[in-house]
Image (cartoon, rainbow, N blue to C red):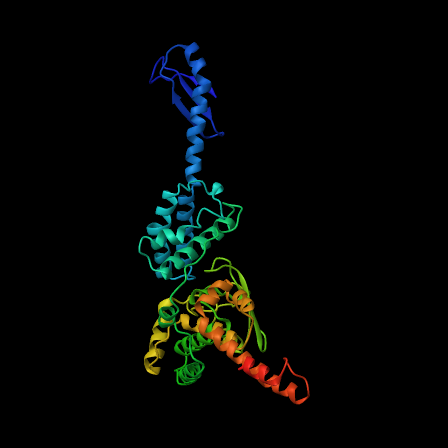
Length: 395
């Protein structure tokens, strides 16, 4: 630092502090005496440093980081990985729910956030404002997604906050995104096969093949619509029967590995390679537009889904594909912990949202146990103190 005077202010002394070779700050000491200026210099320097630190802290404030997060999400829209509606919804959640909570709890410095405590009361705080449990749960997902992004970008060094989700009315949830019943899914598959078979050649045939791959893969792998949109061929290992998908970390519930059986990806890979002049690389989206090499818009999938539902007179949503994938595994007896990890949910969320499938699974297991118990009894081995007890218990 140095004391200087300028032609403009004559005898008035200024403190100049160089921050780098090209950057400096000036402070008017408002005195003409050099001795007074020298006495004031150190205190003035401290004040200047505090102001600079506060400004730097503002740049890294928790509120500011959420702004950075939304800017990043908008870039995902521009690259075709997210829909504008999804990002607009997240922005609304942050502005109307998360920012007021952060301000009320004075959570300014992201490095001082207690991940175990500071957001624990968020659900009750929002419910008292009259918000629906499903709305609050969506906001919780956005909070955790944002904090995962903060950590990935090295703004913080801790895991996302602990927040207990709200219990959601199962009936209402089923009505909004009902899992596809197996008989209905067979009809959907027949419709998709006919849809592809009857299509004209060229771009339309490509688009119909793409839509069929999207639907069948979403059911087989229990993908959310935006997770399909995020996939590139570098994230996918296509096998003759078993496939592997590495869900990227910036999706709704973060990174996970998905294994599933089926030939939908193998068929689609062949179609895409044979119908585009663009080189297929690890960075090529599964949902690539053959004209541009970029991802096809959400509206394209939505329009074809609506057409299929209208012709089949069904009322499922695209999210129903994921629900069908989860339910089919639960009903087949796959352990709930395994399903939760595979689907990218917690066990608590699976228990809350897929109760009917869990109950059907338990019923099937009881029937299997009953059938096996009778076989053991015929061989002279009882699975209890007496036959009547065994049969009653298994029924």
